[in-house]
Image (tube, rainbow, N blue to C red; front, side, top):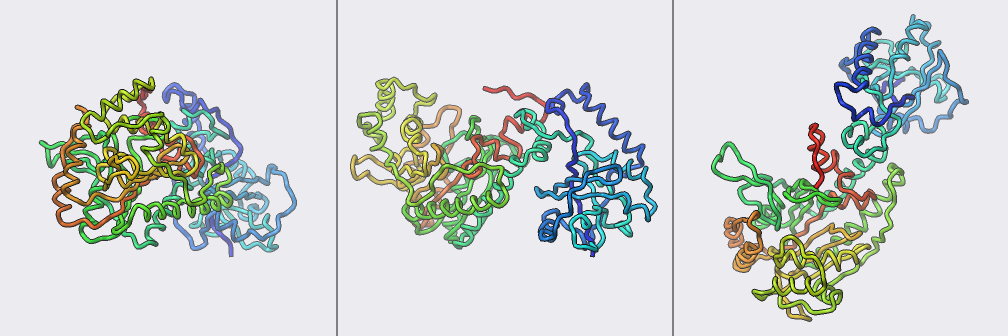
Length: 534
């Protein structure tokens, strides 16, 4: 029995990187496109036919697996009547040959064969089939790749399904070219496609890890009138249905997910997008993917153990995938052996700056911490609220220590308004039951025991309002406080930046490399308007 196969042609061809970015009107590339179209029309090619699937249809991957044990024929050189093709489909390669002598009995002339070969170009998508191999040798199997709906497929030329009107280059190195022509980048650079494929496997592993622990996956609102769950500037928009109200895109799904815990779903998680109207850099994008879960009756130590189990298992899984499928991706120099290192926030900061922190619960705490900045000759952040100042100290003194997987624990209460809090056993400061996991100096996970007292939560919300600048004013989410009155069980909450997780395991340094179309600057730039860098 023969087979039928669809694939993209990767024959020899070359084009300069810069040609892909030139002006669409004056660029010679447009002339080349018109010439290509005319060439196909002159040849009578049906450029975009429909495909009727066939039971014999097989992917390049399945084809390689099916015939992996066959012996190869001796090497042969392509000529006027014998042509080799390299085909790629879904990341898998197959080399085939087309022998015009085999077509003679069916009435395909030598000139027809040559014309068929002349119109093919790297990037073309076509299909064909082979008959039963009489010898069991791979060269006999690689006869043709035909359309599954043509009668006596083995006696016909392969059929063009969709031509590439542009010349697919052998390589793309220029970053701007790759960004503006993402489809060409993925076709030419295996590493770019491998990153996206590995990202999919990582998310699948994460999802299965939680489903296997009896979690329920949900989707919560992205649009609402209050963007709660974190301290960040939201995107604002409007809705036709509510013309007099400002609608915001969520900055985190946290408050929605905890409402489901209140409703009796003890283990719940969501993988999806969140939005923060803030800056762009190597690790931040205004639109990003998170995974958040909430688990009733889970303590901080439970969350730490789950995190260590997840990451150590994922490290093994990803290494197996790299060895088998993604050899173009670098291995990481990170030791995921458990238990991970821990750093206590306040003692570590005090040790680094050589002096104790002031009472962080006092009204003048922000001014007192700002004086420490002046004493140490450190430039403060633009916003000098107490949370921003403490977060800046952490970025200067703690995060650089977290090269290997490291938990930073017991943050000051003001940094975690949604977490339960207590007095630190050593310095009596108000601290939260919270941990952050850092790898390579980057925050990957944020987890804490949830504040379940409606009275304490109101106090923390009111305090949080005093830290927001004039451009980022918000209101208290009264509906969430009312929901807490129904009784939130002791709950552990956990959030992970999926994009940063993929950066770690894909071995890349910039967040836009793990996003399908790059960061917001790249995406807006694809519309044709240049986005200035700040």
